Length: 66
Image (cartoon, rainbow, N blue to C red; front, side, top):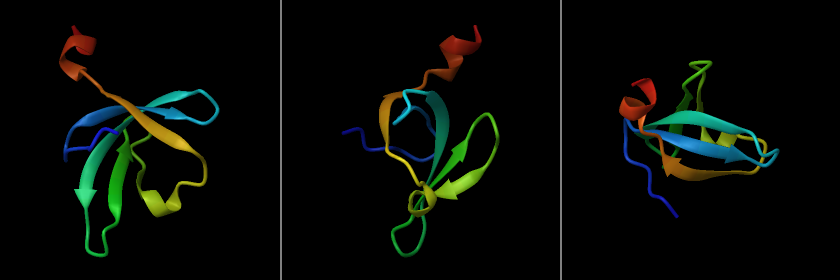
């Protein structure tokens, strides 16, 4: 499993098969892991996610934008 690093963007596969890009914001007190959806800018922690998902890769923003 990929261990996310703060401020990097990851490709995420949802249980529906949809792929999203989430930025990992890091952990807060109480070991909550925080993310931000790149397209909607919504910020959430893993306790709030109500469906299965997995990190599939680090998203290479630099090459994607070129």
